[in-house]
Image 1 (cartoon, rainbow, N blue to C red):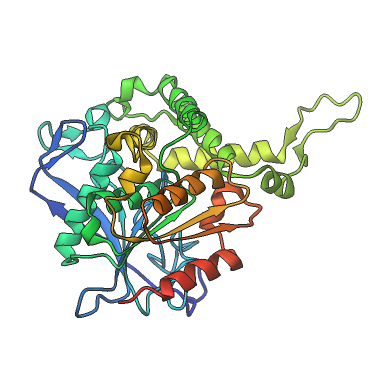
Image 2 (tube, one colour; image 1 turned 45 degrees about the horizontal axis):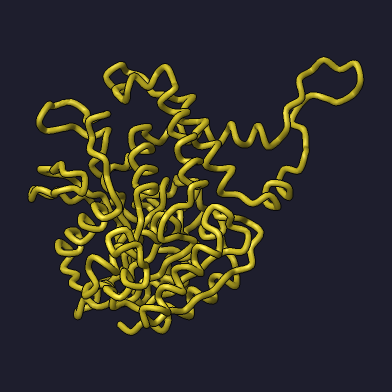
Length: 380
């Protein structure tokens, strides 16, 4: 709980919900006849409506990107280090919009929501979602807010994929695209990690083919293992070693000791897994990781990323992190090279960091400088 709200915080914020009644045709061929999006805003929209910034979240993210919901909050929003007065995404200049994507489990319509056709939770029947569906729904939210053109669309990891899709699908509605720790498509290794995580979930006896809500249970063990698999890939070897090493939580290697040995890293991963299982929906996890797997920016452009980026009009900032092996700097190099080939304006920075993929969420002086200076040059 904060003793007092920090001066560089957006302060106390309240989520908002908008209900859409115009049907949304999804990439899978199914239609959502109606749906809700939960979002938060920070800062003020100027009279010209030219200072709006959209934040696209990653796999386990949501609409609460900055500030506090109450004075009892133990921590602020997930990107509070980068959103607020004087921070890189400066709310003294920008009107910031952060939402929870369709198919999520933090308020926007998803598998836990009631299906109007049945009066019961969607559960396993909720449609598969693609990145382009998120972008289409975000564009409708922009319409509701009266935003014709975003000054910038910003996202890390899966959020960066949404940014690139925005630049392709709505080239005239985005002036700057900030793509952080992302890729134009997942590697086979990344897809393999996602499939292993999904397998852990569907193998849980409480999964019930995705209809666990009807059985008044959740596949807690499967979700916990899925989170553990994912969490391992977000950290660097250095970060895990520095934080935990081979420290023991209990037990002993002394000869004659029969007490089982438990390492600190084991305890930490179990805690992360159990916490996640209590807050995230299994069907949402499956759909969001599938959206990650299916994303391929150049698929519809003869697998030519240069041709794909020729459809864009935005200026790009691309950022990677040296120890990120889930979305390695090489993946960002591919984005930059394609943008250069398409003759598009692009700024690139590789940040030295010891924190792996999670580095895009954490405070870092060099990262904050690069990010902040670029956004300071965005005209509003």
